[in-house]
Length: 138
Image (cartoon, rainbow, N blue to C red; front, side, top):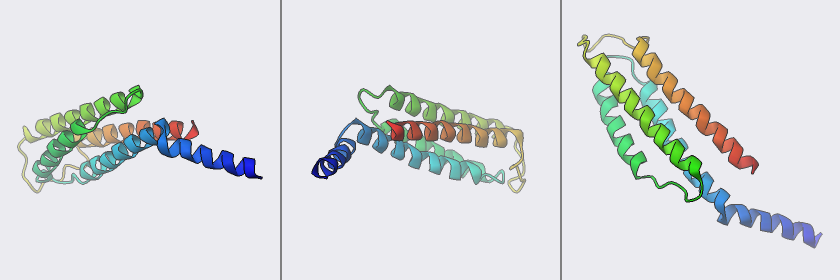
């Protein structure tokens, strides 16, 4: 009985102080940023929403850029780079939509560029969730 308890405790200690803990900390911070990304992108309904969205994306890009990758965990660098690229792609889409100079009250939710922006976010979050599951199984 004592050996089983010791094994369980040492296993928990391994998670709480080792590489897996660092990976989870990174992944969950990335998940928080991704949730904001999804919320802001999903909130685009009208042409007037684009300026707010663009400002939020600039701030989000700055915050993600400051994140430190986990040494020895190459996936952290890859995920960070992919999130930054996806943010940049969405900012580019906003600029494309803005060039059309539509009335501020026009509903653009179903416009191709807005749907693509949401799809990019969803694809990134799906990849992130797969990595969280993978790390959890280690």
